[in-house]
Image (cartoon, rainbow, N blue to C red):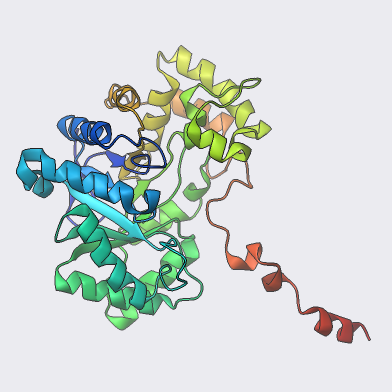
Length: 349
């Protein structure tokens, strides 16, 4: 695979990044098989591995750690750009989550232990945390970089406004800045083309996009009149029943066939064709799924196919506008959208 530079970090990464979410209780519970999948991906030229503490509550990180240790007696670690994330709850304790200094300096140690390494190439904040000042978060991450435990820092699924604010805070305070962003992106989810990707390019940030297969919808296996058969679809059935996405899939299938491509290969080639996208995360659960994706690693799309995709799902548009991955409290919490009942009642008098 021809390597790409991850933003302005100078780190070279493969255009496909191996996502480890499906290793462990959330997907493939066979550790030995998961390790073989990781090794196959590395042998194929993938040098970028992304996981998170919350994936199967640390089990995914443990599997990745064992896989890297088993490869050439642990020397394979130096050949891998290793990324993980923190933010999501890791237990019932309300302080074992979020983006506070208190939690991050504790959780990075847990991730290092599970991954059996002394440093992370990329440490990412999994989601925004409205309860924590971004300066607090960046200050803690800066200390982790200066200590040598972390090489670069990034965000994941941040709105464009939060990305810009973090850049400004880092500049004003002399702190390390987010060097990467990890947003959702696929033919069916193109909303980030409107603001997030242009902002990332403006600030020289690398992007590793997740769910390029739209949680399985772009495999060609989920069609109108059929039941989604994947474990992922069973956990989030609402994402697979939206008629607008299914309508788009029905138009994409013949397009792929006409181009002589599988749906998977067309979808992956689309994700890495955007000039602001550094790497697309693949999340195989089985060796068969990995081999299927890898078989199309050299596929590129011509203008005719890309133009037709633009007609089916216009640039900057999500096939389902409500299919958002991060909903800010200002939208999701009723208390953020309505004045207290007593205040409204008094105003009415």
